[in-house]
Length: 223
Image (cartoon, rainbow, N blue to C red; front, side, top):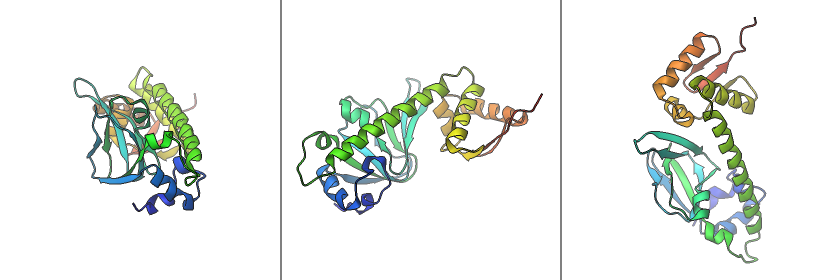
């Protein structure tokens, strides 16, 4: 297996591991790759998985559909980010669907090999385990933030909560978000038409402006 793509990938999972040590580690974890077209399902709901997914190119979304077919975006993963680790670790059938949001390349790493003992030929094994714990902690914080957004009672409050957080995270009042309008509606668990109407009202009131996924937040008028 040619691991060249992962030897220089900027990913928290391999942080602190020199490029020259990565091939041995990836061989130890039985890393394999696959390419997916936009919209293609990577893992369907109900499947049992034993690998971590690591995105090297493109973007994947973790989706959940209710009984009536209403879809929400739980999270997404871009280059260098992981998905599926909670289900691989717990052994439960997937309660979500993982789908390619863009054409993407995904690497699968055997969790059993990561949790099992390793030989001296793979000195980075302990480091990647520590990195995985850091990734899990960061995802827990990400989930807590989403809960804070969607627990707001109105669509406007949800939008303001999310956009305020993005402005703070990016350190500016003009920024782009990683969702189109449908994706933003799914992420905030609201109807797309209702979201578009509320954004239009907020624009007319001078709270914000936007073009597609680029937003500008305005300070409220004085007095």
